[in-house]
Picture 1: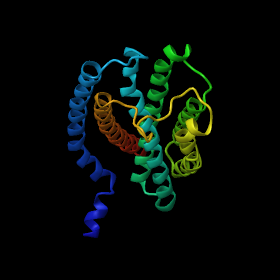
Picture 2: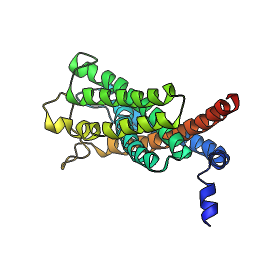
Picture 3: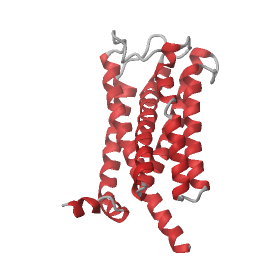
Picture 4: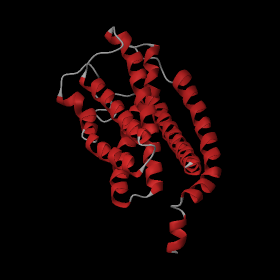
Amino acid sequence: MKKHYLDFTKPNHFMSITKYILPLLGYSTLTLFIATLFMGLVTSPCDAQQGENYRIIYIHVPSAWICMLLYMILTIGSVLFLLYKHPLIAAINYSLGKTGAIFTLITLITGSLWGFPMWGTFWVWDARLTSVLILFFIYMTYLSIIISSKFTERGHRTASIIAIIGFVNIPIIKYSVEWWSTLHQAASITQSQNQIHIAILIPMVLSLCTFILYSIYLTILHIRIYITTNKLIAIQQ
């Protein structure tokens, strides 16, 4: 039984399993994405203050949640890598970093587009916006260290330490709207008196499920690319 369990931690076994899982995730994500588009653009009501522009919420909010969630998982993975130095953990962490950077960039772009009609500018040095920008830089620093080291164990170890230190930014992002006076609105869903109408909340939850599946799809895809790339590097050496 133990040997069978260990087989699942081998990169080759991971490749053979995910070869079948990846298409299923892709089709499921596409189906949910179509449903999210329909509910977000057709069935959900128009906001009285922001007009049609508020519909960016169905991309911006789930992306913001996921980029922080992925970083928390990356932090745990970084601790595990420092303890066990397993190659599959290294592959997962690197792939989480790539996916997290993508979702953080989506968060920044959609946030700028959403805020422009309300603020009159695409960017303000607001506590929430600045802390999310710092998160993007941490992701990019993490990835750059690994790439510049040519995916060596030492590079992964250094990047893992950076990721663990950078975790301090996550609670800053979360509570920035409470700790400082900011232009960014508070988290409506987590407030004691929910300000989101059910007609908006349902497509929001559906959108979150879509983006969760998409983040899993991207992460698995990046892991497969990582494993294949490292095999090619090993052959060339």
